[in-house]
Image (cartoon, rainbow, N blue to C red; front, side, top):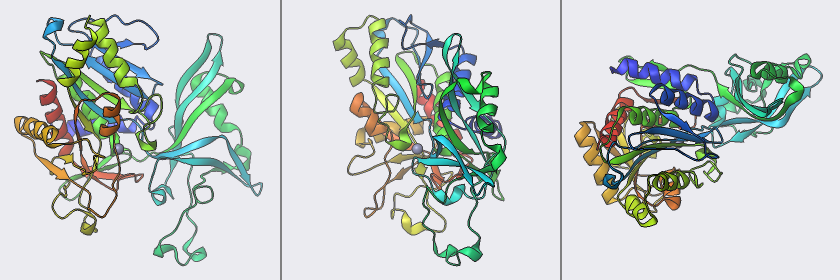
Length: 427
Ligand code: ZN
């Protein structure tokens, strides 16, 4: 597929995935289209050699896998890719409506993850997520997305804060509450959401609702070198992982792609990378294929995981923030992340495996390390390996402005990642 088509598919995926729930639903559609069968955690599984399957947890994390078409005692292990479905944003509180001076309707929101607060100001926002409603058949969860400009978080005018350009400390409870209408609009959001879900407003019993940036993804630069869009971290890698799983075929490894929720808040939920989700899926696959516990241990020892979560590229205005040598650039290829204290799971062996894959795929790779006097972020690799211990490399695509409402990445890098992951999955 050429670069433009690939980018357009990525852009459509991101734009249709305002929340983790939508991201998982869209990944499921990709998998269904490629003939994958859905499994439910609560039901017994019927899986067989040569089959393609997926299972979700909480509708916000998903694991898809393919079983090679060979005898089960010829299967060597798992080839896994992990990414995350969530992005930093604002969550509506349970009772969100707040009237100001009998004139304005605001929503009471709180932070989800560590976003750059200022980037959420003065831009049209919408609301999406899931609601759980009471129906004749019992409680029913529905995806909702108002998909129009309904909210804005207005800045204070510079005349009211002359020091504005010296840096502002934002208080989320005060400064980040969105304006959503005149006072009369109170109650309408539930009516709109209920209508979308096909239930009555009174029957909504639970909500997980988030503000999101409605900006479209776009190609930018005089030479079209960059892409800008919301949620590039980590929907670029989630998309690349699942796309490559669908396209790649292995003769001797079970290929698997896991996209976890809650990376932005520490992964410690029932569906996050620190949960038993991956371990449960791997155990069930092996049990169903008739393997004993020792075979499972052998399989793990012979497995490999690529944990794919975006990385910091060299900033054009702040080159001093990057390490002296280990400083990736946009369009420079896949970033292999290293960390002395092992916040990234990469070691000499796993880095070598990844470099070898990139060489085979004929795509460039580069390295990232924090400055030694700076604390970096964490990611999925070392968290998921605490549950399922396999050799893991932490990688990502280089990007700028991580956790901004609008992030910037390279046009070429997504293609490099897809090439490399397909090569990995074909082994
Ligand atoms: Zn991330």
